[in-house]
Length: 271
Image (tube, rainbow, N blue to C red; front, side, top):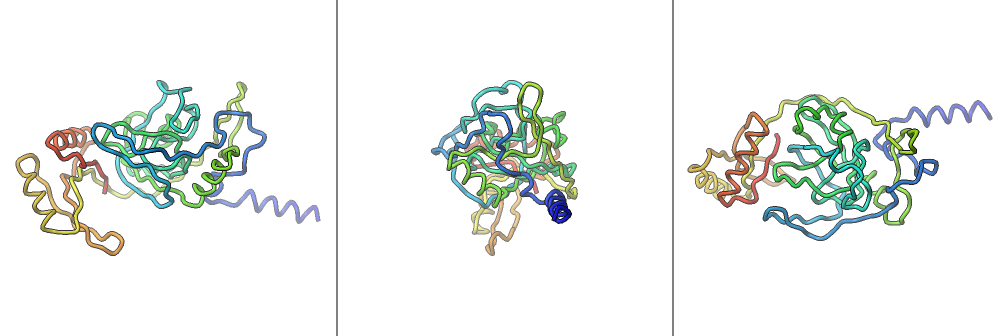
């Protein structure tokens, strides 16, 4: 019986999946500000653009990530937690809090899972703000930004939300407790294949080719734009984009230029 028990424990320890990141509900970890608190929030506006937070378990987006750290350490997040630069967390404009997303740096393939517990980014050309620790693991500290893919982990996020709605302690990633009593995660970094990608400023997406071409024509006095055809959920979509663009700062400049001309729905995307 003792041998069977040992074998069972070894099998549990060797299991490897995204669910490992949730672990078990941490009972031995020191008390912190990560007590369950589920929040979606009301619509809000930043620089004339309105965002509509909602609870969803289907989300994937590519774009530009940035990171935030020392100036916010210890301050309250939108979820009510205290921000810790050394934890694997992130700010997102619309996803429910908490939720888990996988962030992959498209330039180097480094990929980590972070917990969304804050609102942001406040810069229009960004899709997610990650903590300083996450930025270090993603290899984007020096550059400040990175081309990324953000994928919501549906099953894990549902479990996380359920725990928060009950007011229970939030699951923690495997980690250790420092001498000062702070819980730090032992991050799991995956190496994903590196696929070439380009930066674009997208002005709009249409079901009608004529409408897309009309917008591209109107843009000709500002910047050259092209229409790109794509299949989305069985439908043909026509996207109007400027690019490819070599650098993030150049994309920021173009985005500011087109939004100042009235194209407030424009965004930076990566493909």
